[in-house]
Length: 253
Image 1 (cartoon, rainbow, N blue to C red):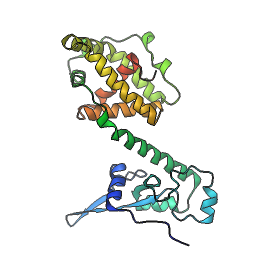
Image 2: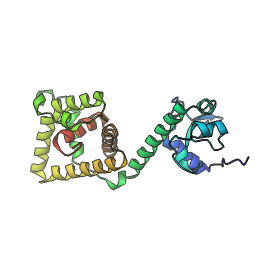
Image 3: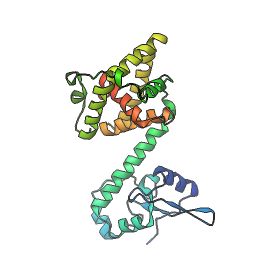
Image 4: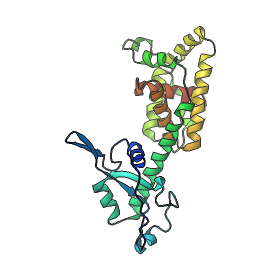
């Protein structure tokens, strides 16, 4: 039988390595090691749908989702450690196959979103909000919002896990009024600055919805995007700011 597996180029391997951030997405192990002052790869390029399926594998996977008709498409391969690759291949199971498909789809969606980061900018004034949230002296300025004013329950659907929804609620209650007044101050210096910021966040929100409408995915993507756009200053502060825009604007509407 003809071997359909092909050799992947160094550039393709680097892309797959970066896709999983240098760690096996199954066990979390590091995918390179250093020896004699040189960095060596310790990962393999694993086919999700097998390159050369045996008859029993074809039968097992005949009704399963395929990420590509081409078994050597980068959509159908993933960088993993040798041990996890071996465990996945022998014996192959439908449950593990579906797990790997979901994982790869998530990685592809994340990569697609990150590739759009350059298209969506955010005003520099958002940095002032993040810095203010990290001020150790703001406790006396925090005025809790009443729970009756919360909109998250009306906006959330079953794709937003309870633990994230609860965190968003808590952030809105604790920080909404404080952030609202910060934006008022910013608008007094530069009129319509808040509207510009809101439209920028809304624009990226719509892009997220195009790629994966899951509210968990959208929330995480918004936080990651804002964190990167602000130089990784404070991811926690970015979570609070995104919670504000969920409450105040059309995010999740």
